[in-house]
Length: 269
Image (cartoon, rainbow, N blue to C red; front, side, top):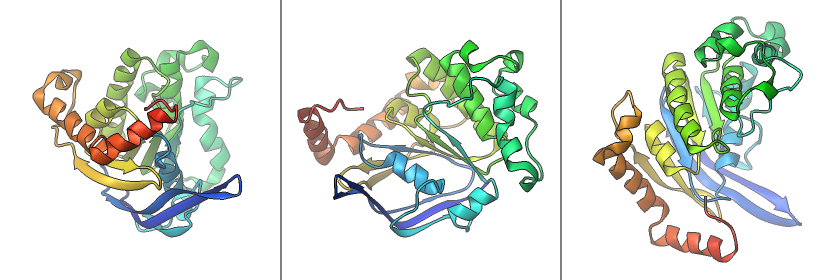
């Protein structure tokens, strides 16, 4: 497990010869072993922030550390697992071979990889180990993607809207599966989501971002007991947790941003 710390992180992109400020002076600390969520309107830099932590992108200013080390070093040590919205499985490889892929790529640079078959069992797909991705549902493909992200025993698991394309029933089932996997593996998990209910159900703490430029405007402790079950969603405490997130997203400033998005023809998410 690893603590994640960001201090004054900023990131800009050049689009049509114009600088677009994706993130501005973002600072946060995520203690090891917790489950954290990042929420906010489209374009607020949530996915950019996740990619900076993963060392897929580099910040223009500020610093990031994972367990006291730069992300590049954590990545070399195979301490970071990443799950994208698209499962991105290789269609010609079986479930087992897709999960095994990071181990093959890492070769001898990783001393103690996870057992691919045990990971497949962990995500509940033991009967589909030799199936091809085309033979799986969307939810099953994402289970394979999560198993693959855990193949090198990462200390940090980063998830970028992994269930956004799933129907609501499958999504809630996958939320339960993700919680179970997180609890069994002991990773530090960071989830990007547009779904307020999902953030409240999964996370210990939620960081709310606003756009133009991307910045953290609220940090909300969810305060719900674990383990969490679907029955929790019918309680007053869960409703209060969701309302706290809505207030942070759609207070006076948030409502103005949302109205601007709607006026611009962008569907809020």
